[in-house]
Image (cartoon, rainbow, N blue to C red; front, side, top):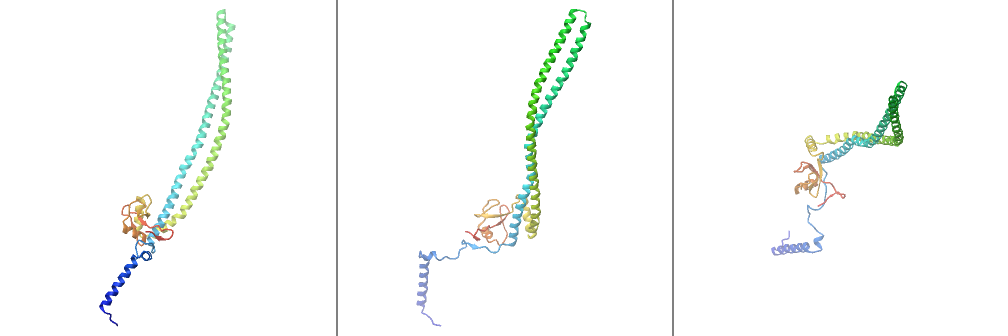
Amino acid sequence: MKEFPRVYLVFKNLHSLVLRDKFFHDPIHRHTFRLPSLDKPRKLTSMNPQLKSLIELQTIDNQIGELEHGKAAIPKQIESGTSGVKEKQNQLLEAESSLAQLQKERKDIEIDVIAENDHAAKTKTKLSSVKTNKEYSAILVEVDAVKEKILALEDRELALMEILEGKERELIPLKVNCKEEEEKFNVYKLKKEAESERTEKELEVIRPRRSQAANNLDVKLLEHYTKVFNAREGVVVVPIQENVCQGCLQQILPQQVIDVKLGEKIIYCEQCSRILYWKETKEGAVPK
């Protein structure tokens, strides 16, 4: 092997350093070359299968929760729908009650008229047995008083008859409105009952998928999921956004953020114990 003088080797090394320094400081070259950086986007490695199952389980639980919540609300919606029917029914009952009261009053007047006519007739029979003009005059006064009372009762009966006719006319549209409201409610009720049945069928399809997703998890991991699920209103697996846990909205440590983005292992939020994952962008790369 050919040996070079020591001075030559030193000169060569210095020349290399100068060239490298010029390369990095030159405005053209420094934009075309970069040393590898951890901040640059990088493709995700294969996601941890357990993390995939956790995300799937959370997605299914979200669907189940939404369906169950909607189904649970249906009885209250049906009950709320009866308010319109009850309002129309109450209006009809009130009108019918008022009409019945007036009819009873008219009936009582008729009975009173009959009683007063009997009274007048009996009083007149006394005229044949009186012996003095004074007694005769007193009976006539009594008969006239009864007649006036009968006239007043008959006037009241006529007034009631006019009121009753008006009330009976008002009753017709109230009955029609009540019937229409009942029919409308029955349609609404059938629709809601069908919705409840349809929701239950959807749940029957989803629940086995949930069991399958849960069976794919390690026992301890499933226990942790269940514990946090019960403690955190069903929200266990959450993404991070701008280095913040989307469950408790607390900042995540930088090293945890890196681990979450890699997706190779299960990472827990130190604040709320939820399981964290990185939601890929459309390009499928992890941004800075």
